[in-house]
Amino acid sequence: MKSVWIVDDDDSIRWVLEKAIDREHMPYKSFSSGAEVLNALENEQPRVLISDIRMPGVSGLDLLQDVKSRFPALPIIIMTAHADLESAVSAYQGGAFEYLAKPFDISEAVDLIRRAMKESEEKEREEPVSATAPEILGKAPAMQEVFRAIGKLSHSSAMVLITGESGTGKELVARALHQHSQRKKHPFIALNMAAIPRDLLESELFGHERGAFTGAQALRRGRFEQAEGGTLFLDEIGDMPLDLQTRLLRVLSDGHFYRVGGNQSIKTDVRVIAATHQDLEQQVKEGSFREDLFHRLNVIRLRLPSLSERKEDMPILIRHFLAQSAKQLGVEPKRLSDDALAFLMQCELHGNVRQLENLCYWFTVMVPGQLVEIKDMPQDLLKKSVSQHDNTTDVHQPWDAFLEKEVSQRLEKGENSLMGIFSRRFETVMIQAALRHTKGRKNEAAGLLGIGRNTITRKIQELGIAEENSD
Image (tube, rainbow, N blue to C red; front, side):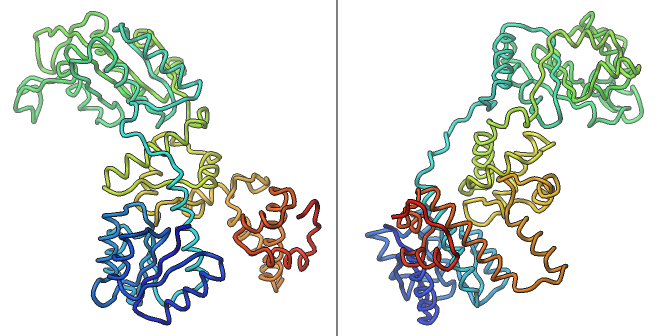
């Protein structure tokens, strides 16, 4: 079994960590210098390395750099009595799992070591991320329908209207429709109606002649000309002004347009794909969207499911986005613990896939180490989850948030001795759950909990836990 390696030139620090780790029944080895560690690495590899940052000879940062180059997946915890910004930044930039400032709380240090061990073990079991990912990911039935539609449209130049909530990937689908069409060798040009000032939209779409208006110092080709022979993607089509809708309808009807300020008709061969998160039928009823343009665009309707309709796709999406953001930042991909994944899957992500992608980037930048736990989630997400489930007992909620809430309520009522009360409850729940899982086998339950046989026997007696079918 791989062990925890401790390296520090301070005998007292090594002694304290050795005793604490030994009490937790974790194997360990100690070294007084970085050079000793480098020599030992020729024959074996630790599960976790915890190192001082300033040591004679090979420093902690030098050791971090050397070990990470040889064993990128090995979690390394850096300790220092010089808690300054430069040391922290250097440690994290070097790939440290976590930065531990001296003097540290020994229980927090042990928790950190356990977390690093758990991550290291899970990383060994995890399948490698595929080097090549498909352009659109999804196994959910709703996404399979989208894939089938893209396949059916691969030999067609029909206009397509893509609908769905913001962040569901409408542009990604539009690009896939283009890439799998006979126009793929020609340009794919995208224009977001909501992102361009209204007075510039006409020029953006159709271009302008020199001198057409103040500032038009040269002829400019619009998006229709830029997309000639290919695909023009008009995103957020519901935000297009009515007067411009009339011009667009004319182009779609006869395939001709005029540049702003021009008098020469220009013929265009472009496939138009439009997208919106708005209810165009309702806009037609309200008079803010032309009915004839709606019917012209709505030849083929392709609705994209929200993330809540394809929860089963979240694990593969998360892995993909974590790998993608890690590649962008030049670091190793993070991973979500089972609890963190379950928590995230029950969150309401109104930003859909785009919000999930942004979250994965946040994890990559902000979470220490490689394993993302529930407590690492952004605070606003944790608070929303607690708020949404105040009156439920959903097992996927962050239990520590509920614990904090209950403790706060009891403190407000003037209760005391809460540490003893909650410690007993916590130990009781943990041991009862482990015994149920092992069908009463205490040895196995103790191993799963990371405690000794004598300890679990004593706790069962102290806490008055009923034993059934125990060994």
